[in-house]
Length: 143
Image 1 (cartoon, rainbow, N blue to C red):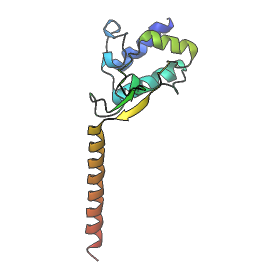
Image 2 (image 1 turned 45 degrees about the horizontal axis):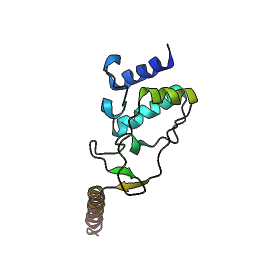
Image 3 (image 1 turned 120 degrees about the vertical axis):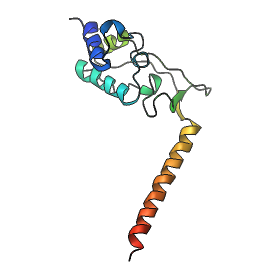
Image 4 (image 1 turned 180 degrees about the vertical axis):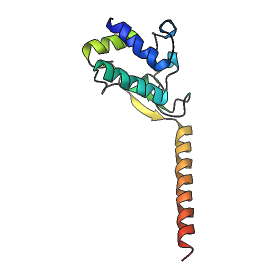
């Protein structure tokens, strides 16, 4: 079996789709892979084909964190414009497997977090902190 067929076989295993139903032009977003699923898929690819993925940057290719469907973290260019997702194709995976290294020329960028996510994080921290304080008060108020 050739390398491309082996990669398709890995995608079939992970997506549960038939080989002819795999979106080979965009293996992550085209097959509904985001968050932990996307992370697990790229790690499985790395392990199966001995590919160094240390330079792989998920924020360019799929939503790598929760919640799914909401791009919380995104790269922006020097002018502050959001950089759209870059599809990862089967051909890109074949090239990486041949080289045993992920190589994509990511543009110069900075990472931004949406205001909505910052507010959610602050609220979550406040909620956890309040819960901890209440537990401590309950524990030590019975002295």
